[in-house]
Image 1: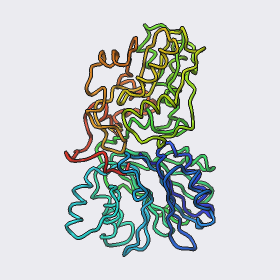
Image 2 (image 1 turned 180 degrees about the horizontal axis):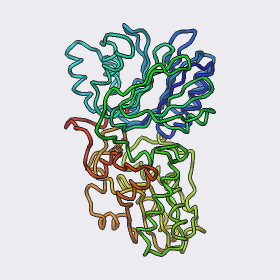
Image 3 (image 1 turned 60 degrees about the vertical axis):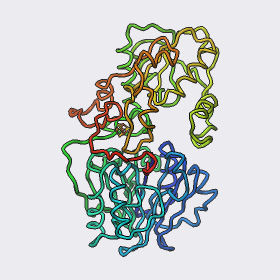
Image 4 (image 1 turned 135 degrees about the vertical axis):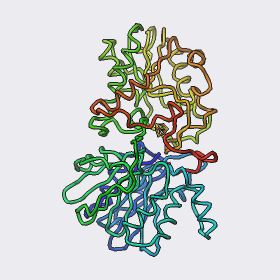
Length: 461
Ligand code: SF4
């Protein structure tokens, strides 16, 4: 999972990109980078860790002088966790200096990489994004033709911001898996993964970049914008709304917060026969669904967990045993909220079930009388190949167990998943066409062909 942002025609480009990256930090805490084009030419600065620690502390803003910049935050699996795969990637090729920041996962990259290797290409990263650098370097024509011809060869998920001198280019794959939005601050255009990153720097959201669109921006003007590849159906990731995107970001004409409140309202309808003393969220993503549940059911909303904000994702490298320890450190129940209560506990989803088991166990130890566990999405039964780091199918609890078995394993009194129809209705309440989502991890129906040897450890997620 990654967050990307780009801005042009602004003397404060690096500061604004860095502020945007802090806003997108939830999309990746592992590494961050900024490429700036200015009086020293094009330069890229990147490091492992959080944006606020890297820029201003490790890398001084005095070095980041220029009027066009792109930025990237990254999260991926531990095996791929190294500075060499941090983005943006910058190259010097026949077309000059070009930098790219990518969110998504290119599903045919192994095939393209193999054919590039046969032609003598040299690879220095393990990220899928690197193939795009080679395709660009080998293409002929103006920058628009070069980008168009290169991205036409890609399959899978890719939202891109590209910097070529002072020109900012945005690309979204024809399925529109990952988000990319356009905004404006004064005379500068901004491209970003989420609208909240535009608003935080004083800009205004204009529109989503369409699936299959390329947009070219220079000197505060949109030079061109066109659909390079049409698709019969849009397949935007529904999980962005369940979990990944920030609650204040806009998607399909409503905030993510509004969608999550609706998920909670639908859950309350599905669970109308269950009585409880309180409804409480698993922080943070369960918060708005619990609020919606409380409003719809009349059951009191309570915050029953204290969150330790000093335990980051990268604090301990992921492994099954240590995940449980991280969950224990992160969230602790508040006894006077929980003890003796019949609780409706709301979380966004169950992946492996490790975190949920730890949390439920801690609630039991604190004296909860009954626990009804509710999830604001259906069971996750398949892996994602489009840029979300879900584990392999054998590690997904819902792919290998019945609901009854999961209920017993978690030691809860009832277990309810939001129905797919109710999830879709929540996510596009203002849209007539509801057939616009990828739901592959919930249904096993993938909108694109998936190569058998595609690994979760190779993507630029
Ligand atoms: Fe999103 Fe799931 Fe589709 Fe991946 S498989 S893009 S997580 S809906």
